[in-house]
Every structure is written in structure tokens, then in C-alpha cells.
Image (cartoon, rainbow, N blue to C red; front, side, top):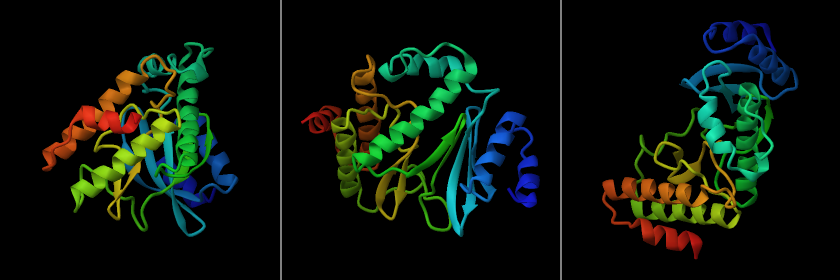
Amino acid sequence: MATKGREDMKTYGNVFDQYTFRNLHKLSGQGYFEELESPIAVGKESNVFSASREGEKVIVKIYRLETCDFNRMYNYIKLDPRYANLKKKKREIIFAWAQREFRNLNKARRAQVRVPTPLTFVDNIIVMEMIGKDAPAPKLKDKHPENPEDFFNQVKENMKKLYKADLVHGDLSQFNILNFNEKPVIIDFSQSGPLESSNSEELLERDARNICAFFNKIGLKKSEKGLLDYIKG
């Protein structure tokens, strides 16, 4: 990583512990990004930055080791058969959470769901494609679609593809759908799980409820049951 990149990272002293700093340096040395740029979202659980990479932009998502609610994470991930043997240890849970997001993004992409392309992950850090040209695409909550009916149909088609690929998003709403050139791109897959998870039906119903509530608020009339029937049909 260039000296400038290292100095830039030090300005986020409240974000990076030394373990994370070393992993960022490692990923940069491997060519996944040159330097971190602007923070896109800084929260209690994770921090999201844009970064430069060979003239393009990528996203670097960092799960915070000190402030993550690992008990909440564990309550989700313990129901995922892929992580049945996961022990309730803070760092192991956070690392598994990041790994699961990476795996879920790959699975969704193989199912031709519109998601960012995941590039790599190390422990609590994920590097992925940035959706947007010069700046990240806006979230649906911040940029309503010009044609809500068409956008809704695209969202429900992506939800159906996820379901057919044995995956439920689990936290789908206007907060984690990007509006990129009037096409939806779904993000934030860490809480997503396979259909055999014992809470998958509950999560799918919540996704449908959230999506219908948003589109009804902006003028459509969509029913949760109708959306669920389409997804499962």
C-alpha cells in the first residue's frame, strides 16, 4: 500500500484496530485496492469505504471487531446449516459473518441476481465491485424509480431468482437496494441464508412485507401474499 494510503487510513483511528489495519495492508499489497478513499457508511457494525483500483473504484467493507453485536450475528448464523459447527466466539462469529456475505454474494451472482461482484475477503474485510461510475449508486430510499411498476417487477424477479437458488435475503428493503440507472442492485447479504434454515420462511415474509410497504408508499398497490406467491411459483 502506498504511503499516502497508509497515512489516510490512520486518520480513521476510531475505525481500524491493528489487526484490521494489517489485513488492509495485506489486501492492498495483493492488488485488490491501492488506497482507501471516502467513507460511504460508518456504523457500529461495519464501515464501508470506496477505494481506487487500477483506475476503477471498488468497495471495501470492514466489520468492526470491537463493536459488532456478535450475539445478534450468532442468533442468525447458528440457524444456517452451513455454520452448524460454529462456536460462540466473538471473532470467529464476525469472520464467519463476513465469509457468509461473500459466499451469498457469489451464490446470488451465479443465479443471475443483480448484486455487486465479490472480489475477495479476509477475516472481517470484504472487497467488492462498486456499483456506480464515479460515485456509488444511490439507495432506493434516496432515489425513487421513475417507473415504480417496472422497478417493482425487476425487484420481484430478483427475489424469485434468489429463492430458486435456495437463498433468502432476510433484510430486503429500500435501504439495501441500489437504484442504478433505473435497475435494482441488491446489497448487504450477511444475514441471508438458505431455505433449509429454520427461519427462512419468516425472513422471506419480512422481505415481501418490506418491499410491498415501500412500493405502496410511493403509489402502487401490491400485496405481500401476491409477491410471495410469485416468488414461490
